[in-house]
Image 1 (spheres, chains in turn purple, brown):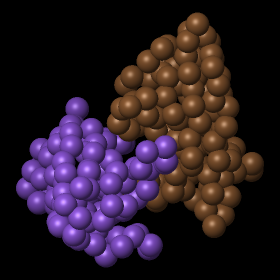
Image 2 (tube, each protein chain N blue to C red):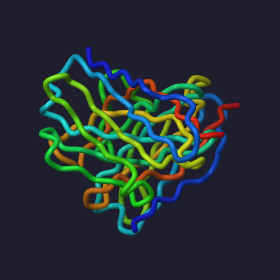
Image 3 (tube, each protein chain N blue to C red):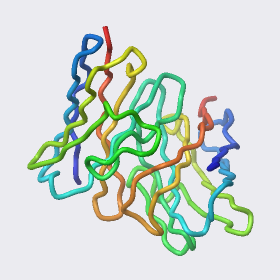
Length: 106
Length: 121
């Protein structure tokens, strides 16, 4: 079955850029979606189809996808961006989530 | 405004059963696929099951096949998840979410707040 690999955790200083990776076999051939989840809250879609932002998501969130790695980039990270981030793809009719990356802003 | 509201989560003994519900509003329910995703305490997101807009197609994670049944009542704008033979490892917050497609393949653009299922004696 298809697997997605994310780093367990990462940290970034306020105002700096965070790049969260999501690895998968030829993931560049799939549509990758990203979700943000803050403690005690439901996940929120922040990037869909590799690079598109839903309405209401700040422009500092961007995405890219090529080869075996998709990347969520948070430019000018803020304290409010501290959260877990999950990538997601479909493998035929099955939803696949990455294990999630806990982003700390400090 | 799109809203999804789960209910039905409770404490249940191993081997028991329950039915979760997800009442939706703010969009044409029958036009969208829907899905259940769960999250065990302190863990990541795990997809459980999805169903197409008509309810005629359903898909399941291998870990729940044979014990979970997804269904929908489009006349009531409600999604369901029937669970039998509950195990301790089914303990999780269960989220319903809308899929931005009619059957499968889209992104999960709206989520409910979740309902907690605890399996323990």
